[in-house]
Image 1 (cartoon, rainbow, N blue to C red):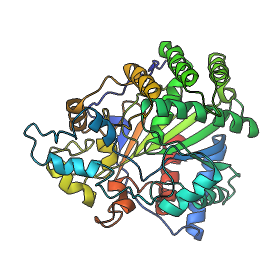
Image 2: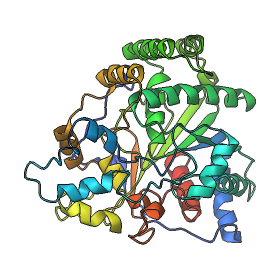
Image 3: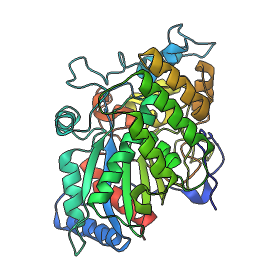
Length: 421
């Protein structure tokens, strides 16, 4: 039986994942909507139908925000002091982490976190980011229609935009909100315990899935009650429309009674999600991580990223090593809550979920160069150069490749191969 993770942080292991990792070659396949593309997607649809997949939800957040969590590094003093400790070139790297200087965030962007999961927000994201770190409405519609070809049954596909509040309290709130959304959706789809739901999350949205896996675990969870207590205390201190302690009580009872999605299996896929929270494998059906990665190490350890200062700052705009958000937005990074109450809740969650703090600890975690989380299968894929190095809003330093239509059939086939073969 799998052991419960109990909200513990993931370990940054440099050991060989061996059978859990593979290195498939990226192939965009035939053009979107072509007969060969329809055939390939239809075959995937047939596999998912036979595996009793009843719905697919795509999750992403705001792609043009503090993706690297530089605000937290500022808060602990590292960036303000120009922290160097003899590390040559570190200031160049820090400039690529700060939203004000990395070329990703623009003052004229129409929306900013916290985001709402509504049509207006989705339309604004589609107009602003298009397919860079964003599952557009057209993408999700094409995915659903593609699965229906070649005899595949119709599988409802939807999108979910999470708040993009990248700190512990924001992600815990997002996990609670997602749990409510999934429960309602499951009722609409008439989900039973023999069915499956597939969740595909880009970037930091994957952290919300990791927390969700710990919340919905079928095993024992000593920390779960404490998580609810901390959030309830925060919500009581800061009342807001659309959230109440009564909601939390109902959610907690649903988890205790094991009524989430009527016991259906929830399969989870992350795309470029930095390694943060540990996964509770008793709370998920199947688990897969996909990372944009280039095997450029000289020591033969292909499963590790390359992290050498100051070279990493020179490599990032060229996406030489793959996804640098995945590599650098690790423990110690985050947004900083603005209210004293949220800050206290964040500290309480940090005591449970993340025993890493301070600039030195962040450096230590990045230098572990870990690509594969401790649990689940891991695909390290070389997606190639996504955009000109002078256009960080188009490549997000290797983090914007997963949500593009040219990668759709590849993603679908790899998920089918890993989960439903």
